[in-house]
Length: 278
Image 1: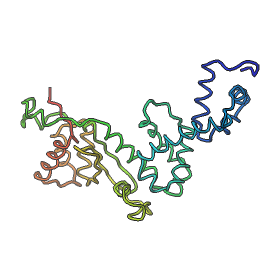
Image 2: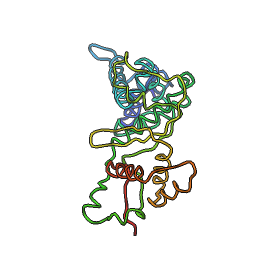
Image 3: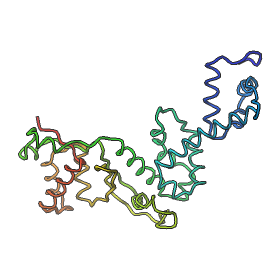
Image 4: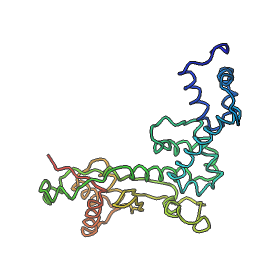
């Protein structure tokens, strides 16, 4: 780009997007390369503020909007790190994962992967698991629950069909295996900062079920038999296949009454989706 001519509209728009969305701020972004300085020279100072100050207003507002959105999406992570720590993490994240989405609700989709390699995770090993859980919660919140009960009311599915019916996890349900008991931090994220732990000190493996009920998202810790059943269902197993798995696995002793109660609750809660056998 020549300094002798003003930038054309596409050039100016592209430059503004890069500069205003840079987490390091306008000055740092404008200092990267001669082309940035050339464009800056064509923007006039205002009556009450110079061009850098005017651009910084928009740049700060953009970053703070994303920071606020991600703070709502990852409240337990923010609580664990504190305001300044969380701000620094998000600034680092946005440098390598700038927003390209129409909705800010999608910006945090790579945060749990990013945290795995961030220096903070060497100090606080539970952070990646906590971010994975909070993203799973957000994903379930935005999905519709299956109306499984309607299949029985309409006659499309009978009790006799159930053993061979094809099962799957509902769209608003997720299974998550973690090395840390991050569900405890998630449940306490809304507590005042002085109440309940903000961080975890030792590993405690968990097998978690995340699902949306009528009001909000719930997170439950599963025992090994429940986990094995839902993992098979996640892969599309029929109910009779799940029961055979229990019968043939020496590690599981599941009473029929308990199994019926689990499946009834999972179906009614939309955790399991059912397709009538063809």
